[in-house]
Image (cartoon, rainbow, N blue to C red):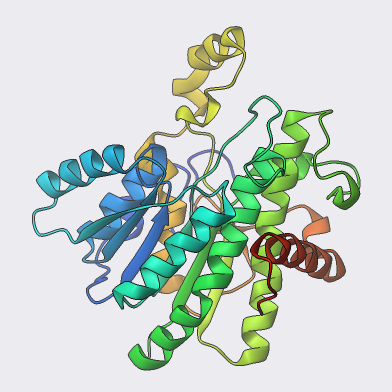
Length: 320
């Protein structure tokens, strides 16, 4: 990767902000869902998309927090179109409820920003008895995307505009388990950070398999994954306090600001340079090289089938 702050082929760098990478882009007429839009880079993503004219649906666990963020954004961006809807990605029931309620609004869907995530939390199981990071970071977004895909397909057909699915992964995808994904031990307690890496690896594999399927269907929708960069957000709230202090001491030299952290998401979601680009991994608003394992199409299909089986088993019925 290039040096911190140096520009890549796109003309942007790690120092570029979300406003800079979307400068001059008119998102009027587009509708986006941003998960985890009430904290961290999710807030800035929602604000900048709104600034560019996009109608943003903030999918958040805490609707009171979401309402406060919406109020703040509207103060900064008069005329911003924002809605707040409840979504707990760690619960498949909540994901299904959200998708059903979204579809009942009759809203189109051009952009799906799978942003929300948790990191390095103590070992916990979700309501569906699945390791919490895998459940929240990957499985919840996998199910959400699956349930909203038909809406995205019809929106793309009717609007004749490209739909974009954006998965927020992390460079931590390089530090999963040695075999990549522990299908037979998904609830392994041995390493919280490896479990996090596994969930982030699955975000990339999900986008890659989705790309393959969308191309086979001839649908004008892209799917990409990205690393937002190291940012001081509440994602690290489970860190050891001594580590947090040490990180804080060097943060201003190596960490991105929140506007810089949201840049790659907004670039991949809105910038015309990304039109037609799918199945890529981005960093610092440029195409980057992920772990070679990510290009393993058999592993990507295995993750897809495994995730489908897990989500279908919780619904009590099979869905395509």
